[in-house]
Image (cartoon, rainbow, N blue to C red):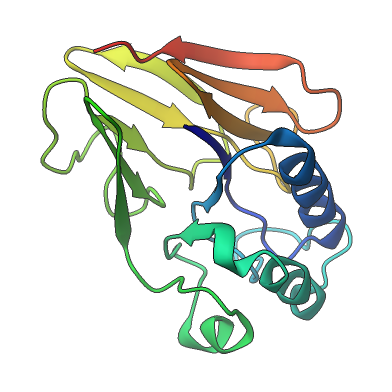
Length: 183
């Protein structure tokens, strides 16, 4: 199974368009959005090309292939613009031998883990900082932010392809971080 991950779009139309172009060319079955879809939030500056209604229109075009979770900046008003559900605080995707626990990162994160089994993968956003690592018996994966990167990192997205989870630079696709998730 091939999956694409995007987090913290924050209403940035150029970033959203880039994500959708990459998704269209990727052969990924699903686009997993890890929250903070339309609103920039009070602690963030307006991202380049801030156009939440247009971001919603673009994402709605692929709604049948989106799995999403609610971020701390997402609201019921945002849900009214989107054709796919964003109000769940977490979701799960089952792989043959492990599970992806999808969350934004403000409720569950590496310092406050949900119940995870051996080799499960916590997939989260919120920090805007890429992570791809094994920690003890579990894996941690954060694709960073497509619109407001932090920590000196470039805008980025994630891919799961077979047993490899990689964070890629949104512009040139260079690998920023990666982990093999073999159980």
